[in-house]
Length: 467
Image 1 (cartoon, rainbow, N blue to C red):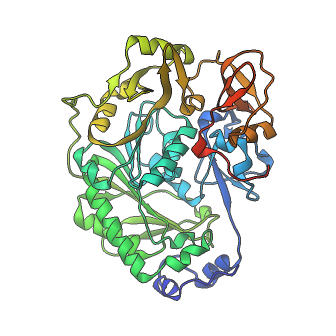
Image 2: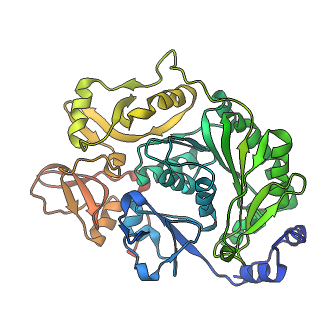
Image 3: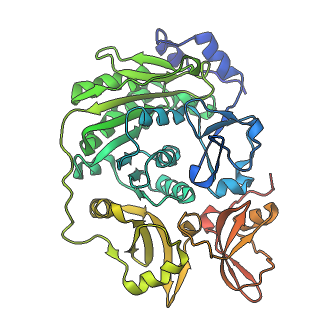
């Protein structure tokens, strides 16, 4: 399908560094699609220093040059029918946005304990990426203001399987309640979406100069309301999927006019094709991705160091927002977990959570100030003297190796993921993991005359077919 780009957009891009209108129009008219994935290092093993995602032919993969975990695929498969996708072994992510990795690693010592806020996080690409880059003793708060999108964010982070993550569902202005709390603030701001026209041609109908102005105002509001939460010397990473100067360079100048900030340049390789730019007033450094110059979609990113404010003074809430699980409850869940690991058990209504011990103060602070959708690994509910395990436990790295596991073939795995009945030749009874190619998919309960499928109903595959 031919893509007719808005004349107002093309006119607005004249004179921007790196903009080549014939090449820009041609790449949109070509109908070409770029597919890229980012592997989950917690689910992989390194071979010769390179991460090889299971399920794909390594010979067919091309590394994304600015991400250690990113790969291009030669064609787009049906990810819906790949059990390894549902097992969280990889995330389907646009390659340009993986440049976040360079922004973090070039500016921040990720070997240290950090507090990171991904403010506009759904559907979860940047959050899962950040989690893979941070040290295990760091905290990632992944927030989404829209409830339905927050549910998708939570699903993707559950599949990623990390314990040092809290998913919140709050407005950006709420984060002013914890001034100076975060070392890194990532704002992938809602924008007019012109960078996605090749991938999502329907977005063209929604684009207009008026939409750009509205997005610019929204971006300023989000930045202004959340900036207080960033500590002095903290890093702000701002990005959009827009080409428009009003949403990119002009926002950088607005930030430097409004707050005490210094621009943080990044190093790029010439063969990456990324266009370094500077804002008109303050020469703030930014990086623009044109699809005729890089293998990916339109994207823009900039980094700043905060030069004002203080570090949040942590103090325990007067009334504990979460309650620690008792000894009897801990005794029920402990046999399910590997012995190595330093975590605490918490109660969120009927659910038992496991959360890193070293992040107790951070957990209590966030729980006291914000609405939490999930924190750490949700283990399950206690019924009598037994645990009814949650899906998150199956996909976590916390499980004891003694847990019974049943290996499925692909057709069986897809049956499971559709939440259809299964027939398994089992010699034991009770709870069991179901796995595909060595990776866990979830829980079943083996009974004398049937198998109960406990895959989450809201996540089940609705499409028919196998590929």
